[in-house]
Length: 162
Image (cartoon, rainbow, N blue to C red):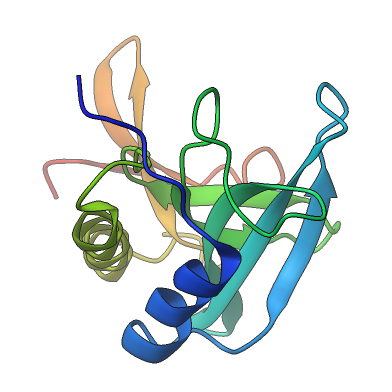
């Protein structure tokens, strides 16, 4: 098993802002209710899907006050593309495997970010013309299909074979 590596907030921001061109701001901070000594920093890079604003998010857990990651535990880095729905909720559009805090984390995180962007770029708009939200792969009793991310407000679907 690979040895855990401490990652500072400065190192994370160097990669995200200088190499992956994220804005120089933390989009949010979530305090972990199960472990009050940690917080999750949320970095966001804006994208568009038609008329809809979406965000590529990177979630990184660090120790409060220390500005660096934990060496062990649930401190992996997560990457996801999300959309804020009209009701204010945030829906996930696509994500990739988490990035472990080990040697080579910078290359691994860069790969995950590009993988999520590639998946997002392949998404199709909803078949409902008034909606226009992205469609995600779903699995139903009749097999896989594309379903609107706006479900249950929008019930747009499309066969995967079209």
